[in-house]
Image (cartoon, rainbow, N blue to C red; front, side, top):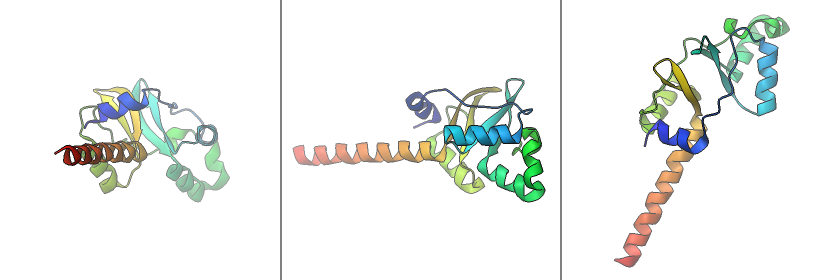
Length: 142
């Protein structure tokens, strides 16, 4: 099971922003799309990630003035990324160790998609259920 399989099931549309986008506009985008993070892309490359946690840290540090800053000043950078051929369990392990919930999927410097820990856990549960069902069928027909 690789990250490419997850992207194949969820699609490749990625909501992203540029580093010049104001924090207030990114906050509105997160709320509108009901998502927890967006990759920050500059020059076609992932420059960082801006998440709900980054909003909290920015507000704690600067108060409401943080909302008028460009997101590049408040994003998490550099972004941890995964390749499409990365095993799902490897990506889950990385996310758990680093306490992150989102990973851009890149091939070289090109972003192919964006996965969340929810995507990975759902895919893993679906696979486990499919294997359990196959085992039950095998046992019943043996």
